[in-house]
Image 1: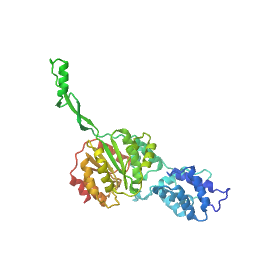
Image 2: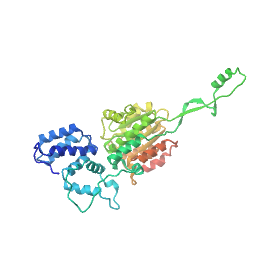
Image 3: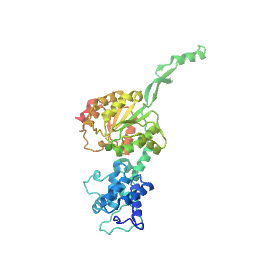
Length: 406
């Protein structure tokens, strides 16, 4: 479909622009009727004689975040007829050749193809006939495929299904002994106070020895999640996982960090996930920015460690380890965090690659101070994390994990 050359009220510009906005909305962009009207006003003010001006006019109206640029660029060139992109979309939809990796496919292209298929109007004239027949029907993944699929490669429907699966996920933490005791017939420690009370009730004729044992309860869970630009697509999915954790048990403390540290524990306590994420969006000011891990950890250790790491808390550290400050001050802060908690687990989406090596300075500074190093890129990895947290594991020898950083 070519760009109209006039703004004639009887033309098709308004209908085409509305259909284009509908495709973007289906692909995941938050576009409503108000933005469509703004787009029409902007195009009427700027004009459509120049294709570049037309592109950036719609870009200014419809794109509000950095992660939306790729999907808008592909949708614009495909909808307003860019022949070069048509060939690229064809190669994406055709079965991949032998030996080609799935990571080469653009993450947003499948969502765009799904949006184009859903939003296609029956009255739209079909494209020219070609020898190759392309089946653009998007089939629903079965449960096993959905569990093992990378969040970055999921379509819009699969992302929605993954979020529902996270809401049903139950995290069973280990039961750790506390300082308090409770009556227990099979306990190993005598309860003298209970024994004396029982003796007084029987006037001292019978002395029944009472026993007690330590109370056991899950330790606190503290989550530190990276929300920088390199972690954006994963951190948005992790927020649904963290919301499920916060509403499934007590003593869950959640912090987000990028260039600053933000405590979102209260925001995630809302039962409605949409309202909770809306509150989080208002509280976080550094979403999809840079990463200063050392500075944020220093603030956490100074302001929050004594408040939330008591009673042998377990810490989930979610980050790819990429630090804009070149790991300045990161190693001592990680060491302090490690010594302040019961167990420190590092979740890194980059670990999904078989050839991953911790070569960056951030990874080398973090790795020697963690008890467990796990991937976090799909539903199966999150389920494995839940299983790992349900059992008690001794801290490994520091040299074994630190050897990976060498």
